[in-house]
Length: 367
Image (cartoon, rainbow, N blue to C red; front, side):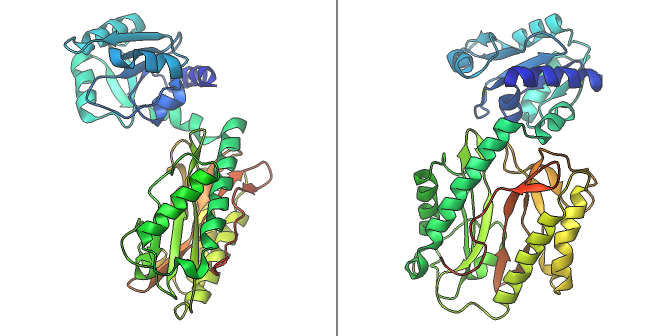
């Protein structure tokens, strides 16, 4: 798959009149080369020209790791004490990069960008997303399959933890988050795709609260937002539950409104529709219910190698939806110091509309 991605990236380089890519440890490097790692203080780059094979420059300690995980066979290593930028100069000469138009990884650390500019003072630099973002926007069959499986794992974990019912009362948010993590693993997930969000009571009004030592109480609305990974691809779903007791005044009406907004957003998804039109469809339901000021974030975000990536489902984004795009629809209403409600599903744009990846119950009652 990654060799096909290299060919597609090289075709895009020609389209945008750029001479090459310089990638840094990131999701873009993983997408193009198959190798992934956290960025460190040592110089590690992957160079992709308009034709030919990519070339890695890497610390020698990474040699075997790159060869085991990447299709790239040209790996130029350097030892501690060597000057890695000498390799960069050699590769620039080979690929014609010295005075070229280069696209650097959007997430490259400033010090490495500085070193590239100093080493190649006659080159011009822009961002690699001009080439890679269009390739990552539409997921192929293998990517879609991984996303479906990851969503199914999250659905099964959601059902399992929501069956706790009254037994959830007295657990801290952090303890509940640990239960979610265990269920994700038990149902076949690979860890969590982001820090689990368990927002109970007034914490549910904070969209990205994460979790704390607050104990879940009877009557608390509890926002549960979590996901896992399968074959490198994530899931992301949100449900809002009351585990026992009576919810606050207005809660049931607001929950119904948010669910209606979710359905309106899903119904608006089709090829040719714009990202902002999906946002508008979901937002109109909440506005008509009188809570426009309490819907304080965009309606959704793309999902792929990253949990948050294009397309962003937000007012002002006139990007047209295409089959294979994958994104969340997650309307919410947040009342400061009271409670919040968010419900989220992931959809894949199809030829005729969309495929909904989540099917766990969306109601607020414990299961």
